[in-house]
Each structure stands twice: as C-alpha cells, then as structure tokens.
Image (tube, rainbow, N blue to C red; front, side, top):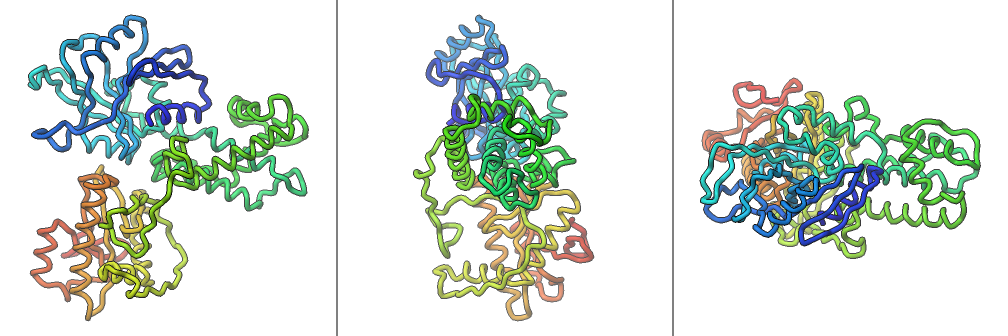
Length: 497
C-alpha cells in the first residue's frame, strides 16, 4: 500500500523518478538528482500500560545497521510510518548518533495524525526515551501529513524538521494542489478527442460539467476537504470548474499539430508529457483507443470513491460495497461513510418514510425526522452560519452537521419538536449524539477525540425543558442550543457561534 501511494502521488505530479524495493521494508527513490532510502512501517499502538493516544513505529537492530550503511553513501534516510485509517504518512528525523544495539521506537500521537488528516499536516515534539524507557531532555520532531502530499515532503525534506519552516506549510499545500495533475489532464484530453459535430467544444457542453465533477470527486477521495484548506484562497470557488476545464482543452488544441487555434499557456511540460503518452508519433487511432480505455478506467476508479481503487492498489471488481438498507450505525457490516461537504440551499424533496420497513424503530423515527422540511431548513440555516464564519460545513449519512474550530470537532444533531413529542426528541437526540461520537471518533476514527456535542432544536425550548433533562445534558457534555437572529445560542442567550 505504501509503495502504491508513493508511486501514485509522484506520478500525478509529473515527476521523473525511479523507485524500487531494495530490502524488506526499504525503498530506494531517485528523484531530481537526489537519492533517498525509505524505511517504512505501519503505525501501531505503543502497547498495554502506555498512553492510549501514543502510537509508534519501531526500528530493529538489523534495520539500523542497514541504514547506517546507506547513510555512508551520501543517501538521504527517510523514516516513514503509515496509518491506513487516516491515510497519513508520519516522518521522523534520522540522525547518525542512534544506538545500534537496541530496538528503538519512534513516537507520535493519535490526535496528531487525526489532525493531519483534517488539515493536511500536523507536527509533534516529544522527549526521547533511552533504552530503559526513561525520558531525557533531547527532543525529537515528527511530522504527519496526508499521504498524497508525499511529493511536497520530498521537495522540502531537508527543511521539514525545522520548526519555523512549518509555519507556512499550509500555503505550500495550497500551491502544491493548484496545478492540474495527471488524472485531471487525462480527463481533459479524453474530452478533447471525443467525436462531435464540430472540433470546437462549446462552453455549455454538459461533458465539461461532468469532467469538473470527476476532478472534484477525486480530490475529495484523496481527503482534501474542505476545499478552502487545500487550494489557494482565490480559486476555491472556481477550482476545476467548467471554465478551467474548457481552458485546458483549448491548451490541448493549441498543442495539437493537426488543428489551428486554441489557447497557448498552461503547464507546457505536463501537457506535452501526457500528450506524448498517446500521440508521440502523431495522432492515430491506436493512440486514441488507448486514451479512451485509460480514461474509462480512470472514471470508474474515481466513481468508486475508494482511495485503494483510485491509486490502483485494488481492482474495481474486487470491491463489493456492502449497502445496509434501513440499518443502524451499530450494524456489524456497516460501510464506513465519507464525511462530505454540506450542500447549502439544496432543493427540498418530499420523502415518505414507512416505519414498517425498519427493524430499528429509533432509526425509523430518526429518518422520519430527517425527511421533515423544517428539519432540512434548520440544518441549512446552521450551515450558512458556519459558512459565513468561514468554518467547514460537512455531514454524513448519520450526522446532520459537522464542523471544526480551533482543532476541535463540532458535532450537531438537529431535532424538530412539537408539544407532544418534545421529551422523546430530547432522549433520541442525546442517544444519537453519544452513539455517533463513539463510532465516528473512537471506532472509525473519522473525527477527532476532542469533539464537542450539540443538540440543536428548531426553536427555543426553555418553556418545555425541565431540570432533570438539563442536568442530564450537562452530565453527557452536550450543549443544548437553537438558532436566533443568525446566531447559534444556548440558555441565557449565550452565543455559541
């Protein structure tokens, strides 16, 4: 998996490189006249009796001796750990003064790699341990990041362990994601060569919208959400939009020696590289056939919304999604849902929910509540408040609304109530919040452990709620709230957001 991720990320960024396995858990990478030896391992817990949040990789004595041999050849040593749940790489600084006679652990924290999943990267300082597991003053830095950012890490590898360097790393991520990658260009080139009555593609061609949708879907599968955290601020609203795809197709038209027109510009090197994969010997049917086949395969991989399929680690036919119809979050074969960007002002569609189709009656009531137009309006109003504050707006098939602020998760369950069902809605809301928090943060690890819980109602409940309910909410660390004057407020008119 690690080799597949590295290969895919380097190839997508149009880099000339070679990589090979030279030994067990050792890769040799040559790129831009630089040589690297990568020791890789899966990140695991520190074992019983240790801090549950502490995770690590380990260096065996034999691996240490091999690394010393490579370092003598003026090769850069990379120590890399991979966490599959968050799809993050963690890096530790290699030094020549390591003790070669004992096994050594390199540590980070679960909350660090979860933060890296959310914002793209996170750093961790820790006091080193000696052979007897005693800490001493020397500090070590680890850096965790989205695994697809591997080329960016390699570019700055000599600097990533400098504290000040990371201050501007978020902007470096945004600039890194700005250019069209190989998959984006392949989709655009495929559209350019599609047969149509005229060679000139129209700006209103619906296929432009489809290519734009696929590019953005791929980006989300790679974990780059919300968009504003991972692309330059001035292109968030137009990232891979139809105008951009149209311009890229015009760049390919300018590259095509058989036609006149098109737009000069774009990334000439990247465009020519993918053009030459198919048409180095001129435009011909064999090249078109291979292009169409590769594009069709890529589209299937993007539509899978599965990173293993996207990078080619798993064949499309090997994944059979287990769809749970009318199940609940505790179903044992539940497919782990994606956290998706919330769509504001989505047109309401009336849905009829038949409770008899649900084995779980609480889930039936929950789905009935979600189908309510007032419920949808309340969630939409909440999303607008967070968007206006430039905070992430997300949801899942279970969670009504989710955001993050100051490295803490904000999980909302929205309930609408009447005079007759108020107590029922409060009980159900509390139960769902605790279930969602446990499953998403501690079991699936999709949201941070440090997540605050909010039960948001469609109107002021102060005349209905009693002291027992208030104290129970406080005991469960759940904040009761509602929307008033475009603010999220709680008891005593406390403004939360």
